[in-house]
Structure formats: structure tokens, C-alpha cells
Length: 121
Image (cartoon, rainbow, N blue to C red):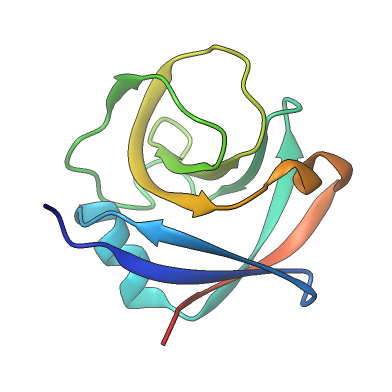
């Protein structure tokens, strides 16, 4: 069984959700930067997205795959960190990061948001 890290995600300083992060090159880099806050934009009526830019984070298992609502992934072509809140059936190149424990449908009502990530103590 792989090691998981519990991460607290705070949206606009108000709403908090928890996620379990996988153990891989991408998550180790993100965890080393925590705590941090980024601006995330609502894109394609399915995801909250922050673009680091191509090569912004390392990957070690990026490939085409499906996703589940609540998944947090990294899309290498644009260096995008995404929280997927709606399913549209698309498979795309991604490096899995983790999964949110709980309802993420509230993201559909947001345009952009300040999103903070911190390892949960």
C-alpha cells in the first residue's frame, strides 16, 4: 500500500475540504511547497485549474486515463493543477495527485478562487 498524505484545502479563506495525496514525484514537489495559496479558475464546467506552465511540476506516471469526480491531477501539456468537480467522460493525459474526501460540486458555482493547500497536522 502506498503512503498517502492528508492535505487541507481552503477555498477563499472560508470553505475547507480534505484530500489524500498519493506518493509520487508531483505530490512530493507540491508538498515541499506547502503551505501555499494559488488562484484557480473554473474551466470547462468540470474543473478548477491553476496553470504553472509546461514543466512547472515533475511527473513520473503521466499518461492518458479517466478521472473520478473529486480527483486532483496535473495536466503536463500546460502544467495545470486541477481539481475535477464534474464528470464529462473524457480521458486525458494526467499525473494523479490525490482525491478530495467529500462533495466538490460547490466549485461549479465559483468563477475563480483563492485556494490554499497545507499538510494537515
